[in-house]
Length: 330
Image 1 (tube, rainbow, N blue to C red):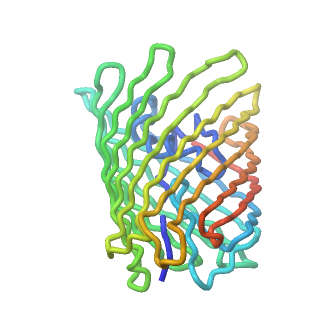
Image 2: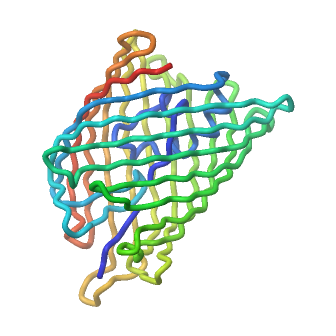
C-alpha cells in the first residue's frame, strides 16, 4: 500500500486581475489570498463570471495533481496519459461593507472538466469561501473558511475544510504584501480513507505594480505546508515548499502573462525498506494571452508545462496542457 494524495482554493477578483499562471502552480498565493485582497481592493459589491473552453492534456505517467500546491498522486485503475476535454466554470464574489469599515465577503467557485473519450480525465470542484475582514492601517486583517468538494473520474474524491487568518498591506505605490495562515483537513470516501490528512500552510506574497514601464505587475509568492496523514502512514505525510513568480502586461486589448514556479516535496518515510524516501522536485512554466472582445467578453489562450523528478521512478512525469477559453463577466 502506497498511494499519496493532495486542493485548489477559489479566487475571483484578485486572481482575475493579477492572474499569471495557466495551470495554477504560480497562482497559489493569489488563489489563497483572493478573499482578502478582493475585499481590500474591490469597491464593487458583487462580481460574477462564467468561463467555457476546451483543452488538451498529455503526460508521461498516469498521475493526477489535485491542487496546484499538492503532490502527484497515483490512483490505481485510472489511465491518464492524454485526452481532450471540455471545461466550464462559474465564479462569484460578493462583498458587504459595514458602517464601521469591516466587511463580509463570500466567494463561490464551481468548475467541471469532461473528457468524452477518456472519462478518467473528468474532474470537478465546488467551493465556497465566507470571510470577515476589518481595516488595519493601510491594509486589512481577517478570518475565513474554505469548504470544497472534489470529484475525480466522476466519483467523489475529497472534501476539504480549511480555516484561515490573513493580513494584507497595501503600499502607497499600489503594491501589496499578503500573509495567510491556514489549518485544514482532507477527508475521503471509505475506500480511500488512508488518504485522510490534517494540513497546515503559510503563504507570503509580494506584488509590485508597474515596476517597469513595460510590465504592469510582478508577483512573487512563497508557500510552505505540512500534511500529516491521520491514519499514521508516514509515507503519505510530507512537507512542501513552493516558490512562484509571475508577471503580466496589458497592451491595448491584449493581456500577456507568464509564470514560473519551483517546488520541493519531502515525504517523511518510505513504505518499503528497499525503496528510497520519496522526494519530488517540480518545475512549472506557463504563458497566456487574453484578448478583450468586448468590455464583458474575452478569449484566452493558455499553455503550461510541468516537469516532476522523483526518487521514485513512478512519479517522474512531464505534463503539458493547451487550452482556449471564453469568459463572460458581469
